[in-house]
Length: 295
Image (tube, rainbow, N blue to C red; front, side):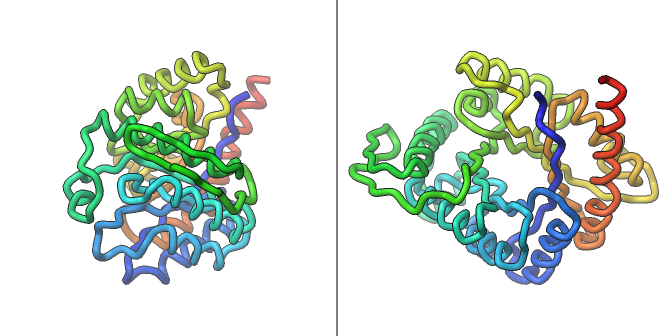
């Protein structure tokens, strides 16, 4: 059975915009949206630490779930990241999900003392990290010996408050295969994977899931959509509410994407309010009509 449609808002970790981030998170919380996502670029001197900000936002909301979009693995060792994720989940009452990426911007990562990995090395490190993170959340002592990570003797804890979703932010086909074989979800952004690429990448995920004995319909397929809600209809991601409803409805029905995180490119607070109050409810209503007609 396909996933129900879900919605969320992006907030930024800008040091000078924390009050805006808090207000946007409360918009999502008050309007029944599902998620708030926060990008993670530790080498950006204008950003606060993403996981710290998520903890701070969790204390200012009551029901919305929060996640890094996506956590920079190259600068966050997986055993420690697993503990941080579980801790935030406990502190938030089970409202944390873990978006995880192999780490772009290789030179900036190396500048902070992180590893300078080739794409192949980064993909294999990501796979190893997933094993370590899942073993940590299981709560039993373990050891791990891989090509990129070694955990000689770990006593994990705390246990997460709920089964944390592990979502990968990847776009290369070989990395996308990991979503199908091992992950709970996929987080991808429209500028990097435009709609025309989605069928190919989703098919890779579904084939890999079935080959691994997993149900591809259980995988979160999250699309970060950047644009503006405007009176003028310019394109799929710049137009009035009706245009956005049509775009997101088709992305769900025709392109297999089931979760949409809105990243307004300007006037962020007002745009987030419009998305939460007008676009998301209208898409839910449109999809309910489609489902009823197909029944």
